[in-house]
Image 1 (cartoon, rainbow, N blue to C red):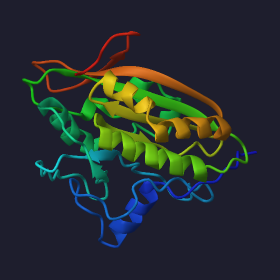
Image 2: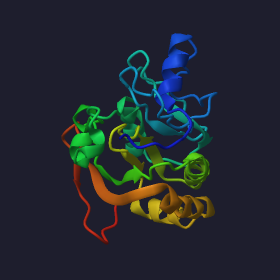
Image 3: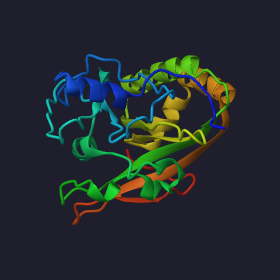
Image 4: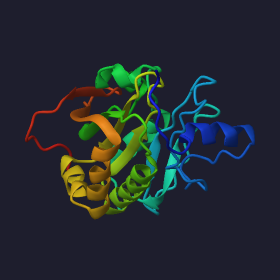
Length: 244
């Protein structure tokens, strides 16, 4: 029997509806719809999920960036803006407009294979590392995710406002197993640690223990080497500082 749990619709559903209506906003401008609307699992898979959009942090006021993306595949953008961003992270932000899961089985794949990392390109002369956190989970059968997702929404906006969070992405739980994967990409490990102590993040973690049967955090390093355009995912060594 498939697991049962409730939550609002995933952004991919809203993105397809808005695209069909001709109202999909340009990437780089704050979205008029709530980018934190979350998955509804009744009938969600009656059609293929072709695109699960990344939720990119809106850039500081002084940046105005419009990136061309394939039709119907524009990312979602937060209303809250980052206070600052360094040049290499700005290049990564642009590349992440095309970020997507590799296939529908992303939740069961190793992190380095779960997304289209090989398709992301940055300027050849840039060199940097970013801190990635992956959250693997399985929802409790019968759980209501609405309070958790509301807390998660507040924690996300809190993290963007305080700086460092470049991307937040989450998928749709597997309809048979309930397993899911979410990930964040930070400008630095220090930014991620600072976010852990914020009140909305603390509240979201308390609710997570009530909503998930299992959950596990993974840490990874996203690396861009000078002399190449591509990026790689590498293991994180405990205690090592990443980024700024």
